[in-house]
Image 1 (tube, rainbow, N blue to C red):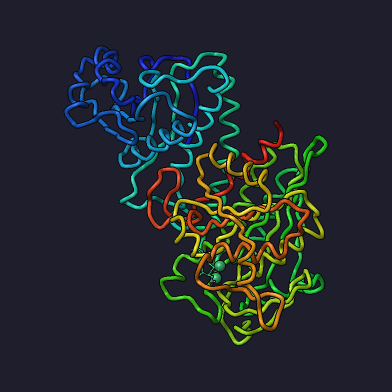
Image 2: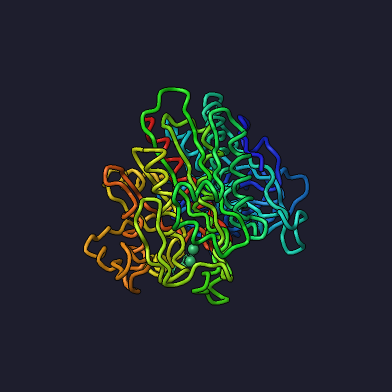
Length: 505
Ligand code: BES
Ligand code: ZN
Ligand code: ZN
């Protein structure tokens, strides 16, 4: 989708659809008066009659049935009361693109009528959010069906902001470039998650990381195979990999800023390319979406694709251990004791709690070979996180308030929702094993917290660490939010990008 601006007014432009954002209470008649005059059509009465009140998310697409007009339809989008927040603009544009999805129209002009666009500094942020919302909503996964199916209508190819002044044009261009870099990262993460596990194996994930790193001289990548992981003593991650015919891969991406780095941040992603549960096998229903179990690593790779354009002044490392969790004659068993890279022994009582085993070694690797100031991990770790806060929200755990607050602020700014839970230390006891240092499951209660406490056992106390359990929002079963389509969402790319950019302030 091409996004651009024009100095011309809506009345001098031409497209399939003219878009107007309306506040509730504002009365459509006043806003639509210039349109009525230009088109010689009565519009406000019709809009009102159809029950449009400008409420948030309300939309009405109105064909302009007269020949010789420069638009084929008018789209009114309600945005609720008052001025829009940056978040509100993102949502409004996402709704706009979704509304057009249901039609055959392809080009849009957004009129400088209705809700006032902000001026000055906020203008650029609004344009960035608007473009982001439009692009996020316009995502399609077409790897396996390049031609859209009959039921899938055409979608927006061109979006133009009318009535943008010359100095604003400059700011808009910069904003679009930022938004595009981030959205391309999100779309890459979505594609990786949506690609079935047979085509997104650990080796495929490694290949994608290599391709991303090759795009810019500030990026680099190192890869380690099973033998090298054995030498590093990664008995926990390798135990998970043992049941699969596929080779595990340890991938270490790096971004080096041009100027002196202020900080070193390591982002770690869970990368289980398919989670069958192993011998503690999942139900058929439970397995249906488990191609998404590498969404944490997908977000890391998506982030790295965006980093050169975002150019944060921090050194960023991205680490993931890609494995497949399968049952077989060589699979690890409930009751097995494995030794992690940190030296701790783990009694495996459930092979479906595999993510924490791979992360334990990824975290130990980061602590030893990266020695970062901060570790942030993203993982589709527990069904319990979904039970706690539902499909749209990520659960955040952190051993340091400043890092937690930084991530919370970043997530708020980009409209990805997180909810922090405590790392309640007395529950460490629930992970006590009779035969090893730790066991990999606790009871049913506080499932996402005991998983986080398990990870904490592998994080050095001197390192600030945050864990994002993205089991809910990594993969949407249905279309509920316009910016989070059904399937892989790329959750985390935008929060991480914002967080890293905030380090420049
Ligand atoms: N990958 C799953 C968690 C998951 C569930 C992600 C639903 C996305 C949607 C994880 O490996 C898992 O199976 N966790 C178990 C842990 C349990 C055995 C302690 C769970 O949540 O049931
Ligand atoms: Zn599992
Ligand atoms: Zn899993």
